[in-house]
Image (cartoon, rainbow, N blue to C red; front, side, top):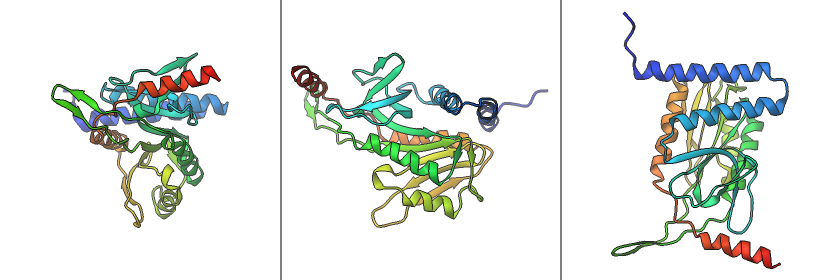
Length: 249
């Protein structure tokens, strides 16, 4: 008689499948760009499959109403329901800054250099200008929602540190600039981490080392997204004003 399916067995299957595909991409693709793109595609597929459908996921640039542009981000988790536009130019996506919930960098392995690199790319998104308008309703209007914190993370197959999430890892997390702080991440073969920050305190790093590391990472990531509720009401006329000003120059 077949063993009864369980939550942990189902997530373990997802975990093993992703690790196998990531290892195959790493070991069989010689060209660094092809290898990186395939790894990004696999992580994007994972998030599209398991995040609630109110979210969408793309490899994308993030743009603001002042025409500033982020670095290209490997993974952008953005609003699906309330985003008035996501531009697609020959399969290059441009997402308005207000619509972004999270950005993640994809690398083959976790180490100090890749933590620093991911931090710089995350900062390029967080520094963008974001608009917010009051929301009208039958009894009046709700005040404009302050821009939320954009989750920043790093996801990899492997981890170069020994032990994987020891003092050297924690020191690398603590060294990054405030605007590029990492909130969450996963080295699929070793475990996941989550970081909380407080003023004048060292980062509080929680690490999960488990055969179900990927499942725990996904659930913690979803919980972080849920805590943010919805994105602010975007001022589309601010984007229109910039387009008009550029046309008149």
